[in-house]
Amino acid sequence: MTKQFVTVTVEEPGSQEVTKPTTVANDESKRWRGGRPINAAQMEERVTAAYNLMLTGGSRRTNAAALASRFGVSIRQADNYISQAQELLRTDFQGQKEQVLNQVNALRLTAIRQGMKRGNYQVVAHLLDSLARSMGEGSQELASQQQPTLSIVVEDKRGHS
Image (cartoon, rainbow, N blue to C red; front, top):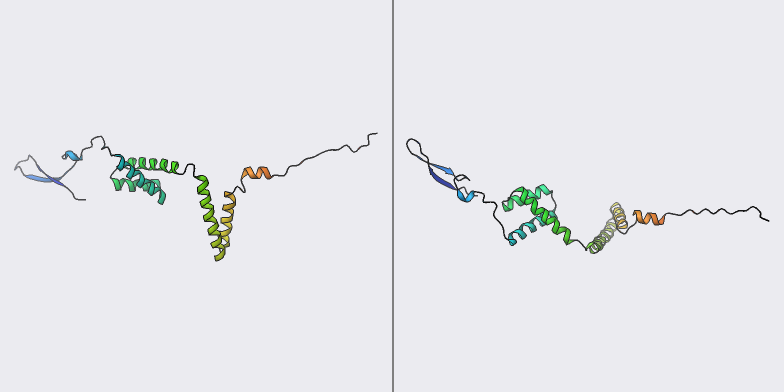
């Protein structure tokens, strides 16, 4: 980043010229104008960048700081981009839960096979537990259906003659 300098004449005895860096006070182009509007393509680029940062991990604060420095916006505005990206992420996976679960289960099965080959039995046990839970085993609904029922019938064995 290069610094711009402007020459300002200061009214002092001797009338000397002093070079000062540009600031909001002495440079019209740096003054806030109620926020510069951005076009749809710029907004899409910024929200997509926020989306990609979310997918790579990191905290919300770290992602906001990265977006703020990349696009020259405030942390608050960068946080707004992250909120829009979260909404985008929410709508992307809506209705695809079944497909995602199938893909995750296929990955689990592949990892189980590889773990068995390598002798990582503890990893295999955790993956099998995870796979079983994804299939509903251990859920409260299934457990309530499988509980035994106790039925007591009292018959009168006294002789009725």
